[in-house]
Image 1 (cartoon, chains in turn yellow, blue):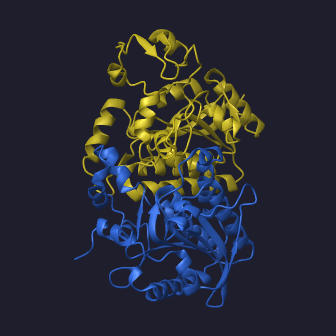
Image 2 (cartoon, rainbow over the protein chains, first blue to last red):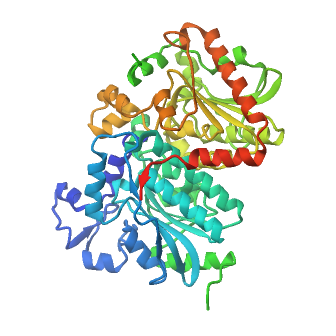
Length: 288
Length: 266
């Protein structure tokens, strides 16, 4: 079922410069940005200045975890949790360690998620951000453990949780252990919820597979950025089953809103303010 | 010598391998199948209902595999839509209300991948089951009969005890899918099966399953009665183990059963 997920996501949305080189028109990756949704070309400077939103179609492109934190939380407020945690190799999967090591060098991350405590417009919360550069932000032991701990700490401290999700799903290289992270994270969400605490999910590009089928779909309030891909099954898997091309907006944030699985679509420039106000509606007032 | 994962997969693919429809009359009495999720429809890929196990009322939830093309089409080859998982959750909540244990039988290639499944929230349906089963205030026992396919299996797999039939497999991705990602060649599924650690024996070693239920020599298809008896023996023990556990302790243990899974360094 997760068969072609990685490929699918790549072919539709990848902004990786290596991928653009393969297309007919070669674009220097540091100078121009070509929107994977509509093909519109922008100067990289303008694109970055617009928080990586396509000026033509409003596609909200992927951000790194650091970029996301920078535009979301109060400056200097971040206290990271479990910064040193790294993956082991539970099923002795061939060259998994090497793959992790190479990605750590390339991204400066230890795994696909950054978690910690912060304030958003002075309101304290626990925040988690997934980073799709790291093995498509797939969920293995590290992602599962950091999410579970984030919810447990938030429960202890009576804090709300805000998660920016992005993922290709469960991490194949950790076999059944990665599948069990779905149960582990969902159970941790349950305990936080039973304590009467707020959990806001923000679906970002792309959120799929085992993450959609666990903690991403059970927030009290589910927000999504415009035009992002959110779904359970890979597009190509479904196309293979039904033997026809799916419409472009299939599994988009707008598709989910229409079918009742998202509460609001929120523009990136309004995200910080929206989260802050939602926190306030739930009694989190912050310091004066 | 121990059979390889691939050899076990060949055994569970035997067309005469018993399905839940074969097992129910051999293990339970007075089974009443109940229908529908009360929201959308009745998914035939998952069945559920009430029955008696050695005099004790229980709720049964199970993926349905067929033995011929008509049965398989009716049950969508045991690949549920969201309404299947929502039906399972409805029965589980009912079991909680009436204080009966829930017994789940897993036998699925995975959740169905299709337009309607996405429209009706396949991800949400599975996630909701993981959340709700993790705090369900009644014992939950899951037995993997044959194929445990990823999230579609896990949606009936958040339990107090996980048992697997001797030749059953349980995997995050089908060996075929794994082969096509790793080597861009789905036909190398045999190799992938053997590296993914998907057998009952692997899962016990990894701390995911607690028990391996023995099968008759050569596989369950060789002797339905014996296979059913082995399952009954296991169920009797498991229900006994869980019957005296106070609710709070049971929920705490269930939480930690999954909480402790994961390997990392820090």
